Image (cartoon, one colour):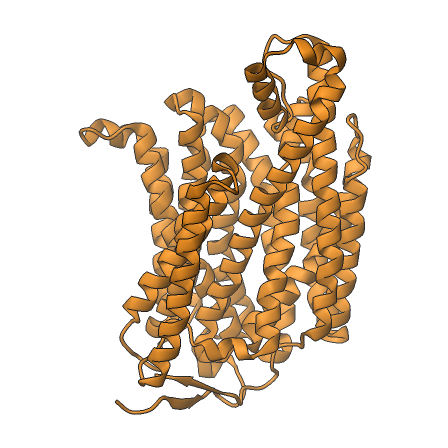
Length: 535
């Protein structure tokens, strides 16, 4: 076979050359509508879970699979999906993702009806299976959307586009808990999935007419061995993260899956290098990561997602378990952060354009650290204002980091690899968020286990070990078992607060350390002139 050849990207990216579309801001609107479906779905499922459990008689394990099945499919397939867009056209892959996501959403809402039609299928089984399928279509949609933005906007305007993108995502995140709460309380849990149908139809129509056909610059066979090795490695890693809190981090099953991840990722790296040397096109050209900014941007995205999603995971339990708020009321309490992102994300894009990513992202991470510290000081009866101030600060701190890291990863990638870069960005966010939730969850559980007996006082000696374990598990969700005396309820709530405070302090430290990494990044290229070796 011939040796790997150098592919030169166009001298300057622009809509006419990439085929991403005519007016780039209309392209942004079209792709944002597709991603809004994913964002809405991610925020409303948590609100709908209690009603789903009661309606379908689902177990706790079933509900975990409703979330974990989606996350697994999404995380495992993201990079491969990005590569499919690079090979077959990002518009085509994006539209397939939008259509599939909308159709599976409707199917989820009809889980009970499908179970009646298909022999041997339970409503919960149908729901979980369709959630996995939904994750696969979501994986097709997200990297393609970022790649279309990369192609539609010139390099000097890409950070503005990413800022507007962040604002739109912030808007959908803000609307999610409120829309979900209204629908669950007043219509049905199925309606939170049915709402994706009209959004998907609008996104499809706009995508067909506003995005020009985006065809691959080079067509090649898919690296199926690379797909198999990377998918196996990602599955092993994400599955370990999801299950390790139950298995135990030192358990033999956990170590076996971690070992499988290490072996598979090593085999993947070896094969990617080998494929490139023999003139075949690898799934992920490892030369992409020779760009220091892309490598650091990936780590930044993972660390920020670790700190944010890991710590924020507990706020729903704080508001609903400790405060006793309804899902809608809890969503309204978190509105200042989501609404703040609507304002902060476009400002972050402009700041990165003027000041560069180093200063802007470093400042954002320090603001994030301060906000996390304030949240570590929240009292058990915190007022709306007490939580709103750190929420707004968090929005203005995290927005420059998410916008900047995305621009660094996608903007520094060669145009013909923008889909893979989008997949890398999304994978880093998913893995970082899952790691943060699992590890900070373990930190929080350990703190609760250590402090709960002290809050119980002498009464702890009279509680059987099995019942104490049950109290500790309940305390991790900010709630006490029904029917227990008020002093035990108070002890559970105080131990939960200690655990949550520690989780936010850990996130504070991570944000400060991550700020140091921003010193080594640079903005996305303003012109395309690099060589990337592909098959």
